Amino acid sequence: MVGTTLSQELKNYIQSMHDQGVLDHHFDHVKALQNEENPQFVMEVISMFCQDAEIGIAEITRFLNAPVVDFAKVINLVHQLKGSSSSIGGQRMALACRELRQASENRDKERCLEIFERMKQEYNTLRGCLNAISQMERTILENETRRRNP
Amino acid sequence: MAPAGVASGNPAAPRRANEGAPAEEEKGNEFPRVILRNRLTALVVDGSRFCRMVEQGLLQAYGLETQAVDNGMAAVELIASGANFNLIVIDMLLPVLNGLETTRQIRAMGVRCKMLGVTAHFYEGERQAFLAAGVDEFIEKPLTPDILAPILRELDSQ
Image (cartoon, rainbow over all chains, first blue to last red):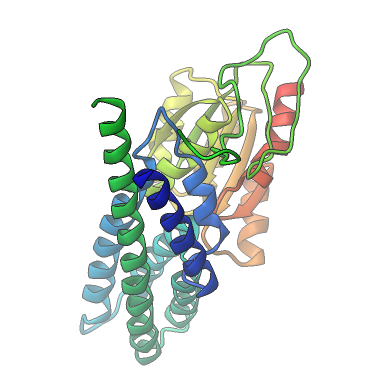
């Protein structure tokens, strides 16, 4: 019963994230890949996404703050971030990445820094959402494990 | 026990190929369902471990056997070693050897399998260049069930 309630809570939370535009339907595709053979898939992809995103953001920070900006490297890093954020359903972060790539191609450092700040805010919002989902998934899995192994 | 009506979204049930039986297709709750008659294999070439995990997850959910490499040169070497795949999903931007050159070298080896070019963001010129290099189709990430299902039906019927 507790597991069912948590499952519904998770569904409601994901729907609210859809309604707020933080997540799009691509997250649902990722979630649908989870099954009994791979019950931790969602937690694993969320963890991987966040780890990779934070590495990418740290690298972009380094390059944008350099005396001479290597825009080619920034473009590659932003490209990766857009790919992963799109794939996990983080549409607002993905949109910021698209804009950051364009600013990088224009070699506009000031514009890059401005958009980068917004991108980081979108990432923080997305990360909070994903961490909440991951925690609920973990609790549901733990409850299910306890139910099967009393 | 899960509440009635909750769908797993797993698009391939059962996972293994259903050899000898006619191909069936149902509209699942979330994914277009494809039940493969044949054993199909796929290679994912992507520098992002996250994208590799998600793309492999999707391919495996449809019952494909998959391998993944994280750069273009590794893909070329794997193919050159004799590995065969029905489908190669390849990112345009890759470390070591970029996606376009990787595709050209794979095609130059005589490989004629389906190659699906993917990328996070592109301009029309980039799309044309990737197609000219030898990919059969080109999409913007992410790879979705709606895109993959018809490709798998096509491969399964060959």
